[in-house]
Length: 423
Image (cartoon, rainbow, N blue to C red; front, side):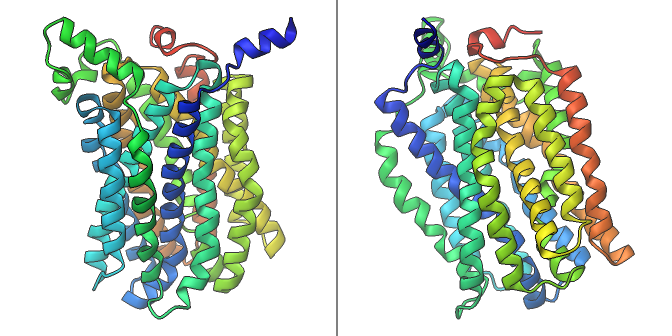
C-alpha cells in the first residue's frame, strides 16, 4: 500500500519527458558557464582594457541590463509559444557569445555581452516555464532543481577550462569562442521538442472563443490589470532581495581573492572548482528538498545557507576556510532559483505565465541584479577592499526568508490549475 502510494505521488517520467529533461538540462548548462565566465576573466579583462574597480562594477551592471531586457523575448513565449521562443534564444545567445571574443574595446564587449545575456536569460526563463508546464506536480520543483543544477555543472566546467584558456594565444577571448558549442548540440536536439500541452490547450481555447492565438499576450501591462498584480509585485520583491546577494557573491569573488587575499589565478581556479564540485550534489537536491518540505521551509534553509556562505566567502582567511565559504555561497546563488522559478510558474495562469515571469523577474526583480554591482564597485573604490562591502550583502537572503514566509502561499504538491487560485 505504501509503495503504491509513493508510486502514485511520484509518477514515472514518460520517454518524452526524459528527453525533454536532458534537453533543458543542456540548455541550462550554458547559463552556468556564462555566469561564471565573466567573473573568472574580470581581473584579466580589467588589466587588458585598463579598467578600475569602479568601472568593473559599471561593466557588470551594463551586461546585467541584458537580464532586464530579456523581458522582451520572454513575454513572446505567451504568443509565439514556448518551443519557438526557446529555439530563437538558443541561437541568439550562441551568436553573440561567439562574437564577444572579437571585441576590440570594452564598449563593444559590454554591448555584445548585454545582447548575449538577453538571449541567455530568456532561454533560461522559457526553459523553467516549459519544465513547470510539462513535468508532474509531485516532481515539479525536483525536476526544476536538477535542471537548474546543470547550471552549476556549467560553472564547474568553466572554472576548470578558464585557467587553460587564459594561457592560450587568445587569452580571455577564447573563453567566448567555445560558445559555439551549444548551438551545434541543441540545434540538432531541438528537432524532437514539442510545444507544451498547457500552451497548446490555451491556444485551442482561444480559437474556440474566436480570439487570435496569443492576442491577449500583446498587452504589455496585462498582468497589472487583473487579480494577479499583487502577487506579481510580491514575488518581484523577493527576486529583488535575492539577486542582490546572489548576483555578486560569486561575480566579485575572484577580485576579492586576488586583491584582498593575494591569491593567484591558479589558486582561485582551484578554489572555485572545488567549491562548485562540492556544492553541485546539494544544488541538484534543492528542488527535491522544496518538494519534500514545502516552499516556505525550503526557503528558510536555502536562504540561511546563502547568507552564511556570502558572509564567510568575504570574511574568512586561508584557502580552506574561504573555499568552504565559497561552497556555501555557490550553493546559495544557485539553489534559490528552483524555489523562485517554481513560484514564478505556479502563481500565474498559462496565458500570463511568460508575462508575469518576465515582469517579476526581469523588469522588477533584476533591478537589484543591475544596480548592486555599481554600488559595490563604487564602495570598494572608496574603502579600498572588496571583503567588507560584499559581506554586508549577506543580510538580503535573510530578508528573503521573511518575505517568502509572509507574502507567498505554500504550493507544495499542487497542480498549476490549483496553485493559481491560492491566496
